[in-house]
Every structure is written in C-alpha cells, then in structure tokens.
Length: 208
Image 1: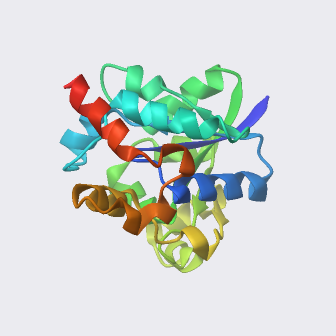
Image 2: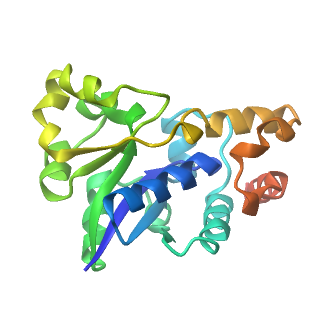
Image 3: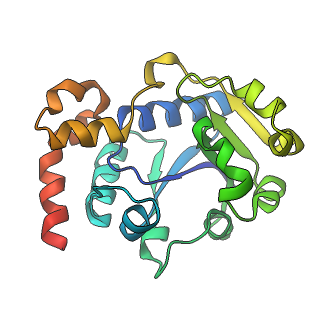
C-alpha cells in the first residue's frame, strides 16, 4: 500500500508554501507521496466567500504543472468531479479505495475549525489520523493542549514543525497582488512553474 498524505484545499492559487510544507511533511513523516486535492470552485466562491477563484481547470493545471517537477507530488481531481463538494472523510475513504493508505494533512490554522466546522472528525481521526503543519507561527502544542476538543483527539494529531521560510506565505496575498497588478512583490510566493498567473486567470474567465 502507498502511504499518502492527503492535502486538500482551494489552492487559489497554489503557493511556494503549499509545495514546500507538503514536501517537508512527506520527508518528516517518511511517507511515499502527497496527494493534492483541490476543492470545487463553487465551494470556494459560495461557501468560503472568496472574492476571486481560479477555475477548476486552471487550478488543476497549475498543480499538475508543479507536480511534473516533483516526483512525490500527485494531484487528484476527485472532489472537482463531484456534483457537490464532498466531505473530507468521504474523499479519504475514496482514496483508500484506490489503494492508498491516506493520512490527512492540514495547516495549524485549521485546527480551531475541527470542532464546529467539520463533520466526521472522530472517524477521520480513528481511521486515518491527521498531520498538522505549523502555520503563521502557531504554537501548535499549546493550542492542542489548552483546547478541550483538540486535547481529546490529541492522540490522533501529529505535529510537523515546518520551517519559518513558508510560515506567512498565502494565496490571499498573491491574489491581492495580482489584482493590484503587482505580482513582482510576491514573486517568492509563486512556484516557478506557474509564474505567469495571468494566463490561468484568463482561462478562468473563458470558462464562465
């Protein structure tokens, strides 16, 4: 069985932090690969309320271009192909059915959402486990230990102290710089394979 970290999210757009932290997590935990699973555009726009969302095709293309240069990186269009945005637990079960041994990979900024914003957290914990990457300099141990819900599932949480290099990079910063016509200001946040972001934005407009 292939041991896979499963990294879901908008990837709107993918950043150097997404790629760097995922690769670091794979090495740190000695897993075979990281599967990137982008969410549906409708979910990003309507449920998450993002003001700008690259198309499903554009985000898949970006991730696949990046993956071509990283042998440990896989890209799944499973969630995008569904009529409605699937729950994370359903996606993990589907990937398990494809012959993988999955473990959920997430940033520490999502920890506080687990209790009220997620479903099937006990099942995710028992069946798959969760690897938590440090984001924004979060004191992960303290967050888990001082939160009643998180401390109750702490046996299933594995902390990855990701390097400072990627801590404060964000897709939001890249989108804002793009809207302002100033991508040079965030060039270090954009993977080299997708530096021409405008090309992908135009693809988004063409799909409307």
